Image (cartoon, rainbow, N blue to C red; front, side, top):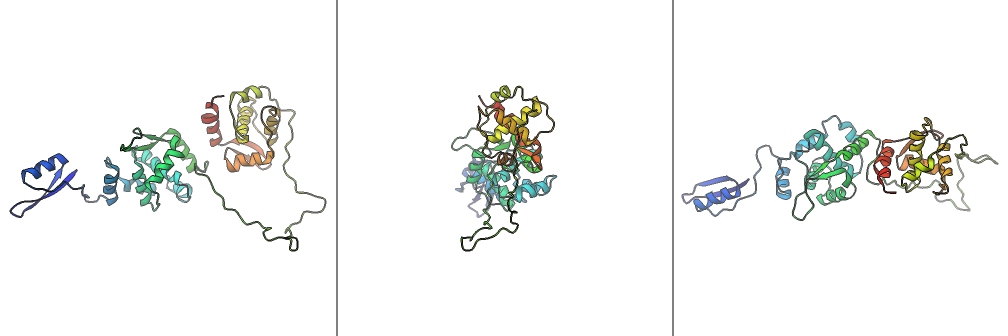
Length: 324
């Protein structure tokens, strides 16, 4: 809505509100030369909303404050504070805005990158609009829908899609760490500063003649792997973690094994050694699949190995859909 202030010849000042054409017509009738001004803030309307309308185009009455308030007063608030707001992952914070807008406001309307930036700003999180756009176009691209084709001068509104909702609910439950890479700070070595003249001795020295025991996988000769080659050849797996996921799916779905151990997985690797390279350290392969990639979980001693929801998604939505 445009607005203009017109001063008449007798000194009377009138304010006209309406469409740009209506305001221009009234101004011409009364001989006023005022240009329509930007929309003024109505009672109770946050200034941020007015600014969003000026920078992002029509806001379709997006109540940014209501979305921000819902984040702090909804059934997911505790999980949001624990898994989203308490971490530095910007991508998850962006997905949070889209998730809340979809669940509680039915994405009516969807959000622009500028509006997402303003919601985060109201939460005390500073993320520039350009960085929101970058995160959506790169890391969160497959989890969002846009209402228009990306073109210069065209305003794009984003909403969360079904895979995005599933992904975000996994993050809220703690089953998924998120899309951004987790950076761990290097801890100083306990041997820092040691040299030949001033060696640092271990607090608990290993007894002479004994070495610390590490897990050494054994070949399970009793395991029935009939059909493993045909099953594995159906899918294109690119690394040890993905090979492991394929082997787990075979053992659970095809071989119908209820309790899977590290030895069983190692046996699958050994059977396929003519097609894939055996891991340099099989124990690290299991640990990376759980602690780094979050694809599997296991009990102490590498027993009771099962796929996580992320591992299931990797198999069903990525590996299974690749062209061999």
